[in-house]
Image (cartoon, rainbow over all chains, first blue to last red):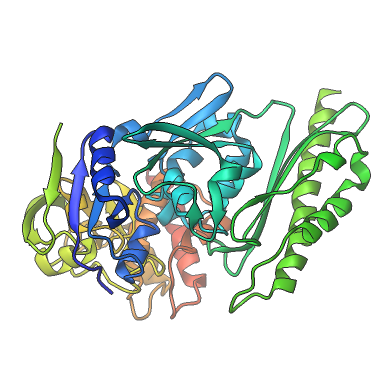
Length: 292
Length: 167
C-alpha cells in the first residue's frame, strides 16, 4: 500500500527538527532509517500530517567514549554499530545482539535510536540497552532529558518519550574487560521478530561465585524486562543457570498472540535464559583459564 | 541552516544519479522510492513485492549500500547515488555473479532476482570470502518462492570464489 499524503521536512540542524516537532507534536513522525516507520506508513497504521526526516543528520551518527559510557547517536545505523571496533570492545552485549536485528539489508539503514524510540517488545536493541543499564537521551525545546532505559520502556510501542521529544542518543555503560556476555533468541526464521530473547552479563570471582550479574528478557512482556537478580549474586556459578531460568519464568507475565501462547513464551524464557547464562559462564571460565 | 519543506500532494523535482547517469523526475513527498525509480525513471528492474520491507524484491544500492527502496520516499533520495540491477553490468552483458546465477539455475520466475543481485553485490564487497552460513544469513533478507535457495547459495559461493581469484 501507499502512505497517506504527508508534508516532508528535512531540517539540517537538530534545533530545527526539535522546533518542528515542538510545533506539531503527535501530528509529526520522526523518520530515521524507516525500517519501522516505513512499513507503518505504507500500511497506513501511521497517518502523520508531517514526516521529519533526520536520516541525513551527521551530528546523530557519531559513536564516542565519554568517561564510563559509550555514546551512540540515535542515527547510527545498525550495520555501522555492528562494524564498529569500539562497540565490539566496549559494548559487547550490543555487538552480540545486533546480528539478530532484522537482516543485512535492513541493518544497512535501520538505526539504533529508531529501534529504541519505536519500542517493539521483541526488539533486540532495547533489550540490550535495558540489560546493561543504559540510558536514553531525549531532546526537546525545553532542553535535554536523560532517562534510564529500564524506565523509558512502558509497554508495547509505548515509552516515556513526550510528543515533542526526539531520541538523540543512547548511553551504554562500558563493559569491564573481565565481564562476560551472551545473547540468545528464538524467532520463526532468523531475522524475524523474536518470539523471545534473553541477554546476560556476568562476572565471576576467583572461587567461581557470581560477583556481578544482569539478566534481561525481551519479547515476553510488552517491554524488555531486566530481571531482579540480586539474590543470585554471591552464589556458586555451577548451580545458577537452572535456578535463574526458573526464577525468570516465574517473574514474567507473558503476552499471548495469534502464533504463540503464553505458556510457550514461558517455556522459551526458561530455555533462553538457560542458554544465555550458560554461554556467558562458559565465556567467563574460558577467559579465566586463559589468564591462568 | 534551513529546513527543506515539500508540501503534501505537490509534485517536486528529484535529481539523483541512477546507474552512473544524472536523472531527474517528479514526485510528491509520499511517493515510494521504488515507485519513483520505476514510474518516473523507467528502472523496471526494481521489483515491488510486499511494500513493507519484508520480501527484499525492491532491494537496490543507495550510496553503495544494499537497502530496501519501498520503505524510503522519493525526496529522501534527492542527490543520492543509486544502482539498480540495470547498472550491475554493461547493458547486454552479464557479470560474474549473474553468470553464476544463470549457470546454477538460481532463478526461475526471476521476481526476487534483481534484489538479491544488488544485495550480494554489497555483501561480497564487505565479505569477499563468505561461508555458506554467512551467505544464508544474508539471504534471509530475501524471499524466493521458486528455488528453495540451494541453487542461489551455490551460485553466490561460486561467484565469490571466482571474483576473489580475479583480484
